[in-house]
Length: 166
Image (cartoon, rainbow, N blue to C red; front, side, top):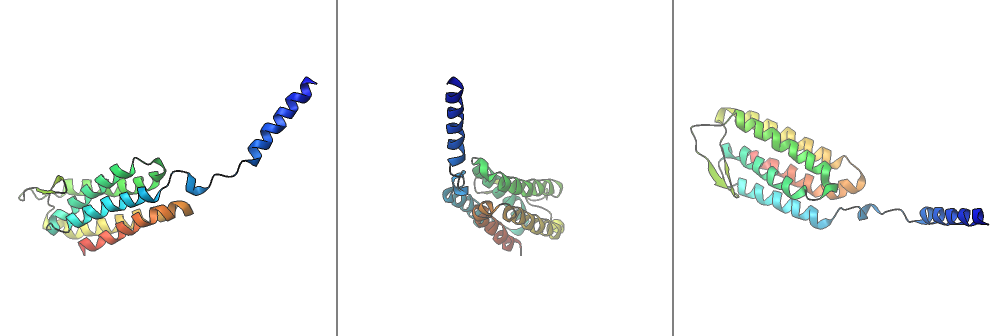
């Protein structure tokens, strides 16, 4: 009798597990609000970068990526997008460090101080940024369907930012 009750309880428990509806992809932490906030922070930064001379834009874009990563890092399901944006940020940081124009002062933009790169390094900087932005957008669009849906607007903003250096 006791064995029968244990077996009945096990069957009931298993039935409950099997009968559970699958978690909808939209219920795993993605949100339109998080995506919009991320795009808004990025777009604001890019618009601020458009106001400075071309030699300052690389570091300004680096700062924009850094600020965007801080926003997106608060939502763990956006990890892939965060990694893609962080890689661009780090690449730009290294480039600016290696090619800073010490004859020009810093400018204050969007709450931070940015450095100029040398005019001679601008073609390389532009090429680096174009490739990094393309790669980041590709990574953000390369995941699952739900990731592509939520990361797509971020990838679009990243691709649109390339016009800032053309």
